Length: 325
Image (cartoon, rainbow, N blue to C red; front, side):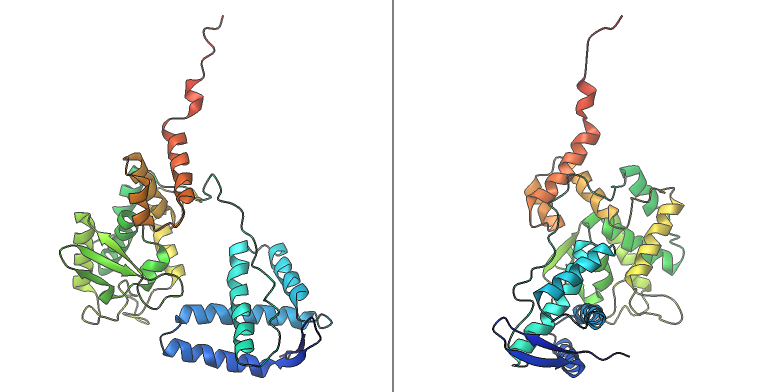
């Protein structure tokens, strides 16, 4: 495998050799942070992937100094290759972490990412790329799992959690049994991106959802283990282990197909869109909806409101040119 050794040159001429040994020590530091609970394992994995991709690009451009120009070229190359701005920024986060760690550890005198920002994302679109399900489609999907089986009980609870709380698939995947609790209201603590401690709470209020969750917990293979995944694998090779994101997506899309929901724009995330659209149609105040969706900007919510208004009362319906001969 190609080795990586570069010279980081600051604008004033300060330079220092930086190679794979430094990266190996940085990776070891990430692992220590994960073990200490200071960083989520998924964040460490993402950071390492970002540095791996950048390292390969730097090797393929040996004549370029590792500085803002090379980093911008790397980001431009990823965008040209079809990566979305969000994906580029996720990878870039690992590169920034590497060089900031190296600076703090006195390994380099200049951070090449200091004056290089992430890729600018476009302003909030006035239309979502994913379509919400209709109310009838949501009910049809929820009716598909075979609740005479343990897998069906798990899947129904998972689908209902998404449909009635707006839980993101990653929040479903990260939840553990201890995150589900009650003090008069049934709640599920959830974890933000990169967080090792819960930072928000979902309320399980719909009685059908509560019943579905109770039925699933009763047959959960590790129901007495508080650290077990709330929604776990039931396969022989990974019984009781965590589900991966691709498995959750395939499961949801499989039930969509069974329910006759075939529009490719309707994805796992569409269940969350369906909840928001349903609340808007029912006249729930935007500030109250934001406590469920956890959107930081009301502009995002306004996109939903715009789509609901267009669907329920399109302006085109008011066009009237009078009688025609």
